Image (tube, rainbow, N blue to C red; front, side, top):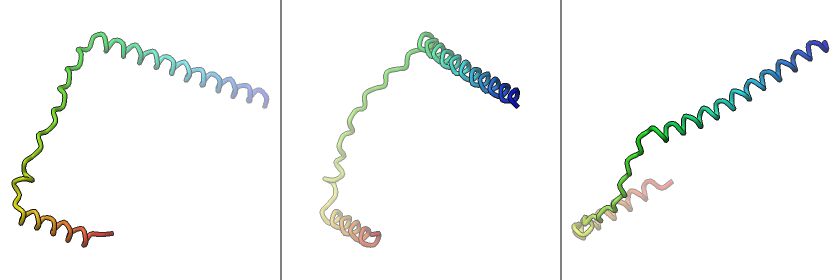
Amino acid sequence: MDDLMSQAVDLMVAGMGFVFVFLIVLVFATLLMSKLLTRFAPPEPATPAKTPRAKSKASAAVDPDTAEAIKKAIAQFRSRHKK
């Protein structure tokens, strides 16, 4: 029984050691690939700055009767769809 427990502990330590070594190798491989990519990959093109959109002049082009009809339609929609 004691021999079986000793083998189990040895197997557990070997497995955990293998996983630990594998993760260390993985970290260093990732770091190495990152350094290689930054050295040999072309630089990213500069993204142009976003220009603010010009304000639309549509609100000035709507006549008062149309604006009133839109307001009434919105009010009617909201009154019907209240939760």
